[in-house]
Image 1: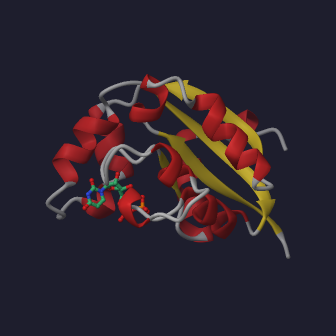
Image 2 (image 1 turned 60 degrees about the vertical axis):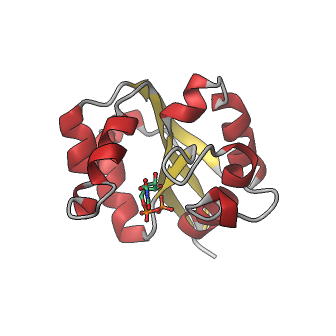
Length: 140
Ligand code: UDP
């Protein structure tokens, strides 16, 4: 299995509850390595650009408001089959449907405030990494 990269966000509900370390520990224990990380407060423009694919969805405005409501930690994660590995440890979008032992089952507050983002394909991982990081910020 190839070593690949994915993009992760620790969302404002998790940073607010001081869960950055707890979430990162679960990512690391799942076999992912943090090769880039920074704490930022997203602008409205960044949130709308990042979630542009959801622009027509009913939750888009609320989601952008939530994602700019506090700091987030954006990360590049590396590991074997990183995209799927991260999706597995994140759990389902709605924490009510997330499996035991996943980040969202453990920590998410709601379908919106669900603690983490993770890319859903290798193609989107590259786009999302490039959205927040320059190559010199990633140290593998
Ligand atoms: N979301 C929401 N309401 C919904 C579905 C999604 O607020 O009904 C938010 C939630 O924060 C989710 C994000 O929009 O993580 C992106 O949705 P997506 O369907 O891509 O889920 P994900 O890939 O994050 O599991």
